[in-house]
Length: 101
Image (tube, rainbow, N blue to C red; front, side, top):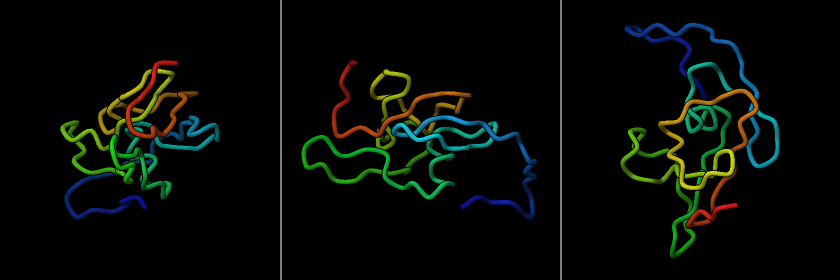
């Protein structure tokens, strides 16, 4: 789901950018963060809690909560709500604590 029209804000049609999520190529729009692009694609679970492995999703969108931590280009615990997508970027969901690869 993506907001296309708003009474106050303007949204332009940005170019699509291809990146990889869990090994599958997906498309986002220029200017999207990883979390917002995945959310627009209907992907709601971004990580799992450390102890109980409960689903975590797009929550605060300002980098405070850690619910959106994912492994990006082999770097664990990247706050995807603050990281913009880039062409060819590799993003993987994390089960709890991230591990260095």
